Every structure is written in C-alpha cells, then in structure tokens.
Image (cartoon, rainbow, N blue to C red; front, top):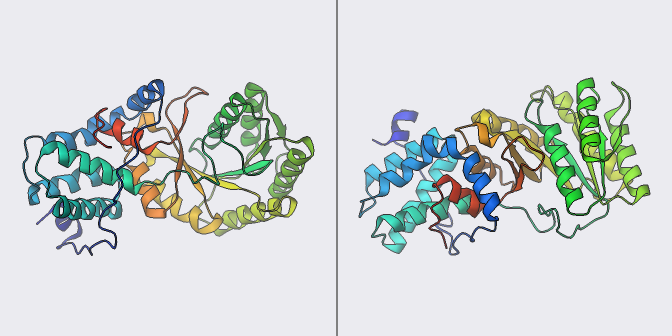
Length: 346
C-alpha cells in the first residue's frame, strides 16, 4: 500500500492521463546567472526540506519500482504540491518509464524534472510577463487581486519599478478603499518608485477609483496602469461581487480592460493558497499568478500545484524584500533551483 493509500484510507484509483507525457522536453532556463542565484537562495528551504530528497532517493537506482514511486509521492505531497498534482506527476512518470524504458538514475531525475516543469504554465504571449516585451495594448491595464497580507501592495510596487526600469510609464490606482492603510501603503510605493497615483478618500467607491485610473492612464498616454483592489473577506460573495464590478467598470472605459488579472498568493500558506486560488479564479477570471514570500517558506511546491490545478500561468515570483526581488517566472530555472542547481533537462 502506497503513501496515498494510507493517506486516503484505501487504494488510490488513478485514471491514465489522456496525454501520457509531453513529447517536448522542458525549455532551457533563460534566467541570468544572477537571477538563478537569487532563485536558488529563495528556494533553499523548500529544496532542503523536500526536493533534495528526490535526488537522493533515485541515486543508485536502476529501475522504477513501487518503492521509488511511493517515496516520490510522499516527497511531493509533503512539499505542498497538492494531492491532485502529485498524482498527475506520478501518472506521467509511470507512463514515461513505460514508454522510454528508463535505465539509469540520471534519466529518472531528468524525467521527474521534465514532468514537473511540464505541469506548470508560463505566461501567454498576449499577456507578456517580461517587462520589456511589446505591450499588446496601451495603456496595458493590470488588475491585482488577492487577500490581505499576501504581499499584494508590495508586488504592485515591484511591478511598477520593473516596468519603469524597462522604460515604461506607469500609473497606479488605489482601488482598495476599504482599508485606509492600503491607500497609504500604495502611496508610499508610488513615491518610492516615482510613479503617479490615482486615489480617493477612504471608503470611496472602488469601481470609481478604477474607472478614474484607467481614464487618467488613457489621457496621459501611460504605458501601464496597475490597479490595486480590496483583499479582505475572500470567502464571502460580497467582495467577489465588488471585484467583478471593478473589472466591468474598467472595461467600459477601455475595451478588453483589464488586460490582465493578476492573483497574488503567499507561497508560505501552502494549501490555503490553493483555496484562495479556487475562490478568485471562479469569480474574476484570473489570467496570471504571482507567488510571494518564496524565500521564507519550505512550502514552495505550491507553485507547481496551483498552476497545474487551476490552469493559470505563473507570471512572477517574489524572491526577497528588495524592490528588485520580483522575477519573471521561468519554469526551467525554477525546477533547476528545486533540484539543487542540477539542470538535467533538455
């Protein structure tokens, strides 16, 4: 009986995946050496606690047996990858072994890396994560959502900084009017990054602030408009209805706005981040994810699970406290960091 058989109280029933494996290998990392080093440092706790076990358990193995798969299951689920995604990884590895006739430890480790990378989505061309990429619309409107305390305002400040460093003009909108501190915090970030800010008083209509932000960005010829939103009471319909209203109002000012709905999740909350992702993706059509506080947690496996489970690409990773510490997500670089810098993909 395997790890999940014990966890769930009986034999697991895993249907064979429709596509048993990917034909293409994971792309080579595009991160710079400095970015890879920062990502390596940010994932150290996750790697030391869990993913390094993957490498240790396959060394010296010349076959994939039930013991290897059971241990792989345990490593993945205890790293907060999530039950569904863990089973997906196991199914893909089993299918790959059957097809490719695995014969060595290095091949198994490469296989695991490739299948994990294959489950994570990267940004789509029409929603460029790279700050210097050509913007499909101008102004390019980003609506940022997430519960309080996940690092939403900090992420907005870092986004503004990176866009400005890429030569973009940026306008911020303080549409989280339910919390006076949120307006003050965003104002601090606007001053710190030299970015213009559209705000109203505490308690004002959030949709009105969002509308004014988009209108001002259009009138001023700004390249990017980033709109903060309320984040409390994420389990209650009232907030989700409010966010949907904010989204609709922006679309009335500029067709197709917001062009991106970015959900910010705290990686250190593990499975709670999955529950938040479920709530927000059902309510406001999330198009991308930003995972914060990766450097402070041993639960970095959530990055894999949340992208796979909800079919939403990871756009950014928060890898530190500094304004520069927001990285465009590179799945090959991320998997390389999880496996202790051993890139055996490609």
